[in-house]
Structure formats: structure tokens, C-alpha cells
Amino acid sequence: MDSLLLIVLAYLLGSVLFGEHIARAKGIDIRSVGSGNVGATNVGRALGKKYALIVFLLDMLKGLFPVFLARLYFGLESWTLFMVGIASVLGHVFPIFHNFKGGKAVATAFGVLLGVSFKVAFLSLIIWLLVFKLKGYVSLASLVSSASAVFLLILFGFPFKIVLMSLVIASIIFYKHKDNISRLLEGTEHTFSKE
Image (cartoon, rainbow, N blue to C red; front, side, top):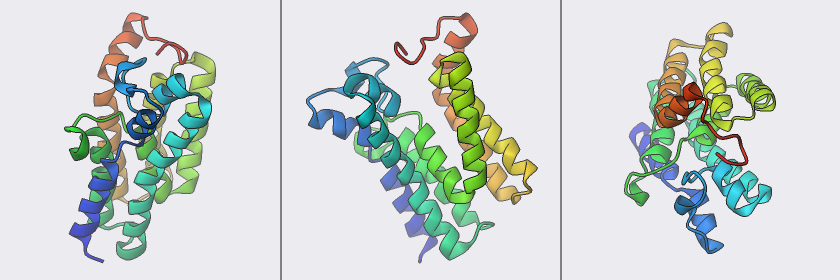
């Protein structure tokens, strides 16, 4: 398999915004509802938990599938896997099919992490659930879990390229959550039901 082809495939697959397509099929413009985000959280507000779960799983698979292929054909320590993981996330954040206006890539990033390590992905999910349970903020849970993933990969001795990939992805997630971070600092961030 050609590495450049896989990187392009990862970006293009990431550019498919399932939340927007599913909401549109139900007669809803997801960008005009709630937070205006195209991810699972906002879809859940508009369409219910079932559709939130569907969008989460589809967005997660966008990250998992190309990373799985990259790991299978090029190995865990390859620069190809590094680029494929980042391309998947960038596709969701800056999708070519949607005028480069995408989502926050938390589910897609989780899929990338799952393709690298089930153990680290599972622990990151536990951290996400704990923060959300304690604080009630999806944004805070996403920020803490994405940062935690970097430290977990270091703790378990993963290759430098994997740690660096995770750091780049976490930085993208933090950038996309900059407004949420401001609201968290100001004490005006909404909880799940209102975010």
C-alpha cells in the first residue's frame, strides 16, 4: 500500500462529517442548533442519544480505520502512521467537503488512539467519563482526556513518533476548544444539556 495514498485517504475520510449528514437527513441544520458543532454531543441535543452514539461511532471509525491500516502495513513506529493519524483529525477539523469548517475531532482522535493502543484508549475513556461525571462538562472531559493520552503513551513507553502524534492531535483539540477554555476560566461554560 502506498503511504501517500493512505494519508490522503485518511484526510478525505476524516472530511466526511457524519453528524451534519445525519442531522440533514432528519431535516435539521446541526450548525444552527445548540453549540453549532457537528459532533456527537450537539447531535445528541438535537436528535437524542441514539443518534449521538451513531455519530460518535462513525467519527471514531474515521480515525481507527486508516490508523489500523497504517499500523498493519507500515508499523507502529512509521512516519506514515504519524501522518495518517494527524491527517484523520485534520480532515474532521478542516474538511474539504464542507468548506474547511469542521468539528472538534474528539471522537476521531479517540479512534486514532484506539488504533494505536486499546489500553491507552480505554484509560483515556475512563478519564473522560470520570471528569464528565464529576464536573458535567463535555469540553473539560475532552481536554483532560486528550492531554492524559499523551502522558499515558509516555508512561507505557510508546515510540517517540506516537507520542509526538498524540501531542499534535491534543494541541489541535485544545485549539478547537479555545472558546470553551475561555468560558471554563470565566465560569460561564455550559454543562452537557446546555453546552
